Length: 230
Length: 230
Image (cartoon, rainbow over the protein chains, first blue to last red):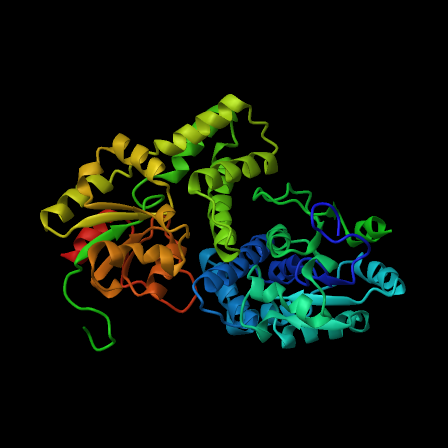
């Protein structure tokens, strides 16, 4: 441990957030754009925003519902708020697209390099096991991960401690021995408060959240994570 | 009680959210617009959005910090994200503006009518006692309320049950005997889950959140609340 009580040395495992970190959630905007020209990006942005808000509200109010249902609810809200009249076929097509989000181009090479270091890699996501299985199956990344941890097993969304606790439980080590990687700044904050070491993938060149914590490292892509660990 | 277990008859007291419901949080956009022409509205919107997000994140992670500090943090994030270089004087002027937000024009007549009905009125807000005291002092509404309940007393932000519990504790009645009024749909959801009767002031003609609950009543202003109660 270092002087400030945080673990030193290489992490014993690396945990990755899935949505936004490995998989491009805003890619559904392209599908939406074909349905509603000029409105695809707005729909994707509001859908994502509401999806996250609903996980937080449900967590605070002890009203957990699986991420698949939350995602559908958030889509329905976003479409209605933007006055986009989704028919059943369009709605299903957008939800299907969420099961097959594209992998960011920096993910596969970064994960291959990290695997060569022999550090176990895992996913820790709000997604249900079924959603994560679809994503990983389509991505070609499934073999990269020693574990795929879904918060659905504990019925708590990030940023609840019970959700982050899946990592230490899976690897039998302390939070400070694990590195958590997320592009979602709120997720990075929760992980820092929980006690993980944290690398923030700042894909959109944003300032970090102002809540009194700072990631251990940050960079604009997963390649930056590889450099930081080296 | 009605067949669905909710209380019937008039509420024993009416609790009002403050920010956005009685006081116009987006009015700070006018102050910001004078500092940064063309950007005031964007700053006000992102400031408010982050302020709310930070209360939720802190609540989920058991990292309560008073709303005054959260509000300042959210302003600092919003200014940085929008590349607006706030100097110390501008920052203070915006924070001062938050202590003297204008009352919505529908508030005073609606509160006067409701007071004439002899139903006790109260505020239940995330704001600190100091913030609420400034707001009320400037508004001329202070005499309207039998109680001003700040979540700061319990160290939990809405939508936590501990925050909403201030209402039943203050009036010595069950949540279903109280009517909670908010323009913030997320706040209305939390209040419904808690067990309050809820009237949603839908000031911006939005759909209600899709989280499986529905307000008991809704309308576009506090005047609509008066009509609904009559």
